[in-house]
Length: 154
Image 1 (tube, helix red, strand yellow):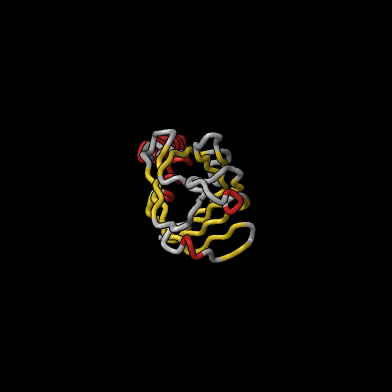
Image 2: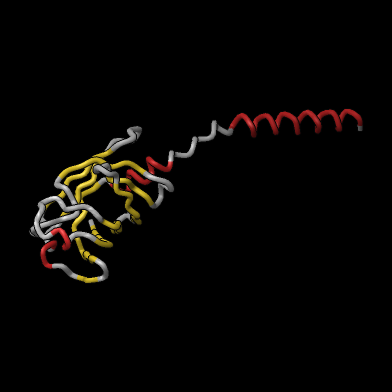
């Protein structure tokens, strides 16, 4: 009986060691910045835009936002195209970085920096921000100041 207990005890220890040794090292979770960047990097086509709640501005019908970046970097780039507005709150090119929290805030690195709230899925990106500057093709300044919401699709 004593011998059976010893054998069972040894088998239990060996079984536990085999179980533990069969488990590989845990894969570390990807940084949230990398996960979000992967979702953001794309060419996004405008599906809707509002300024202070006024919908469907025809001067942004063909507007596109291309977001680029490499995991591990702290700043990224974007380009815009297709806006026919005389004045726009978007420069043609620029840089951006993640804000806090990473999942919902990006910062356009204008002077001064412009915090922007975003939400992104595999197929849709929405960016909202309060623009107080003069615009990037300076005429009719009052037409770009205010709360903007841009909704894009892939």
